[in-house]
Length: 348
Image (cartoon, rainbow, N blue to C red):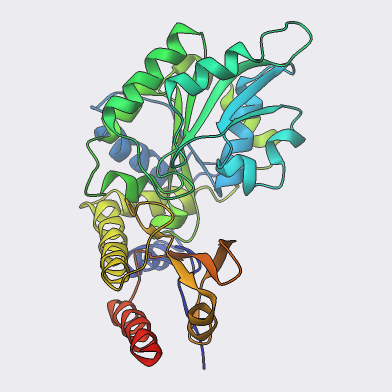
């Protein structure tokens, strides 16, 4: 039996509308290296969400590549990154940032989010210059690695702290779509453009085959940015593939429609699991759910569904991660809920 995957939010290909657009334009000739009409249109559509400002936007294939290019382009060799200890660049990118020669200063945080006090503490404990790497960039993600989201007030406070300390604020937006369509969200793309120096919009986890859009509101950081993309192997000859997908994603609200569905499926799962008497290791604010379940139940569920066992809690319980996507089948969500209830009934 083929297992239904709750492993991640990119197990499927792409939204049918995007696939159709790729097929329909397949033989249309376009200029290479991101100078095509589709990429220009995608930039225009995204800028409309940024208040109509003309902000530099670059498309790359993946998230790790986006983080590498951004970090290596804005930091000097002795400068470092401040990040939550659970941050994606810390735990899920194989030391990619360190491989560029930059230290990551990690901070233990609550629910995966950095606060201004965390930044101030990191600065205070890394100030023995020139004997210590100098903090220069603050890295956050929205949604975070544990699915939590930043409020506007939180992001405003981080922005103020960074400006006061001459730090750059970079937001990893691999799951920015689900953050912006979460029930508790009060941020817009325009807000993020005003409060960060660089951020990127994830397409891979929001319905495209691949692709991330790097947005640089701090225009001074965009100078010769394309050289850094090329040097890191990120400048696609067929950049049209990325531009066209983002054009479709930001036409008629598709980006927000797809990520809203992912959140709705996660909420349905989360509510059912908690109503069944199980606790969550992190609040469900977007499309990731972290229930603490008996190992005996987990073993049964693994026979039908794909998911990560996130961490061991004790000898008899573990935290698992369930991720919903733009394409999650609600019938499979209902099936998983039913199987959890059946297991409980069997134990009784």
